Image (cartoon, rainbow, N blue to C red):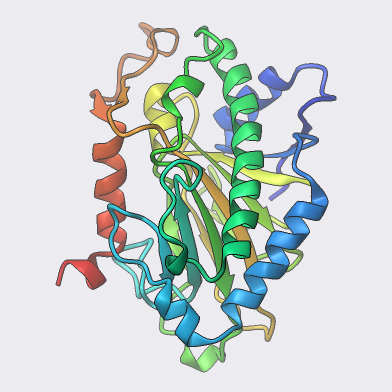
Length: 300
């Protein structure tokens, strides 16, 4: 699948290009948005060192609850598709780490924490730039989305998909099961390996090959609700690594603050497109989705 690459600060009309992409497929790629390549490379290097490191450190940093949404999860500990076998991936999730950071002993190291905070802050600012042009495009004040994304539910997530023997993979088992993202936007940084697939409008799965210097951006469930379905929250998945090569990716989930009431915008409700969604709080939706993806572990 060829996603458009939108050079954010040098594009003549980024708002319209973003609107077109999210309306058509729910996915796009953004370049030139202020992410330092050297910082991203350092995050990749530290991520690989952590995931290929000792189990004792991983256990000390273990994930405790969907409410906290922080820490390490090992293979088969998450089902992004609750109806399918558990995902073949390891993760390290870091929620709201600029203002509500867990104690240092929950981190692999202080240096690891400080690096992730620096990257989190940079990606957060990039997301705010996107939110401002999107709000104006949708007929709202420039800060309409920014003011309800203070970090409470914004999470940085490192993901590792280790190489697997094809014979060890169960039928229907994936690196990350088919799912939609829960919140507003996701920014996904891919290494050069690939494996991400998006469900197209013709109901077939299409590869999204990595594009050097670009970040994959997709709309989530709550943005679909805010826009009354104008922007699509699209199913996507990651294939298991059965070709002998592992995969790293880095996701930043830009999700609204818990009490935010998400109601379809007036500009997106018309006689031809009547209101499709009831009002819901962001926290209610996000926690329901998180709990379902961890059901096997936390709700026995």
